[in-house]
Amino acid sequence: MDCFQGTNRGRFQMITIGIILLVAFLGLAILVSSQNPAVRGVDIAVNNIGLNAQSSVLTPIMLGITSLGDGGNLTIIVIFLLLLLMIAKEWRTAACLSLGFLFVSWLTVYLKNFFMIARPNMPLASSFGNWGFPSGHTTGATIVFLILTFGLARIVKNKPLKLVSISICGLIIFLVGVSRIYLGVHWFSDVVGGWLLAGGVGMVIVGVSSVFTSFALLSKRT
Image (tube, rainbow, N blue to C red):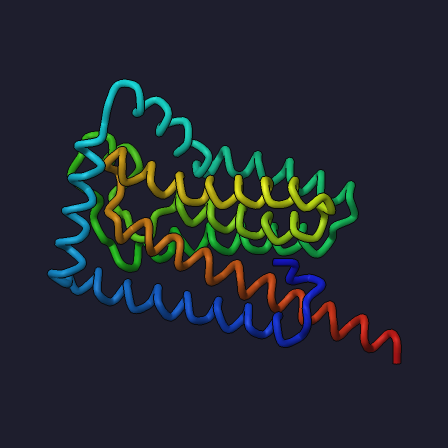
């Protein structure tokens, strides 16, 4: 997990995995935009599961979880994390987090307008805009907490605390996506697309950053 201190082979493997995720996103985007019957069927089935699970107890919880992926809230979270990272002198993690968040935020808006995939026909969905692919909340939460995961793997020395911290980040990534389906504001494919896109971008950014840092340190020694 500590990609910053891994071998060059591990770093290039991370970049490769990131590229594979991005290719998978592209494949999914083609299927979604062509209205593939199989993908459409899965979307409708999962959407129905989410709607049937709605309750007066669970809905406020899901609204709270989904707010973690809101652009404004994520911006505040990122600024707070950047301050902590700079205090800890974790410049690489701070740079990756800044670049990843800004790039994915821009890219998500661009892709939504490019693919123009409509959201589910639900009252709440209209309040988040017309287009749903990929899910902006999901991509935002994924890029932030994925890069934070790699940073925590480097910063936190206590193994139980490290495991708990990384698990919380992973849980947030998963639950933000689930909350979007539960609330009926995104199709399942929107959320999976968000996970693939942000996961791929995050892995490539962190992997490339680690490779360049490794080469820079090596050149100083020679």
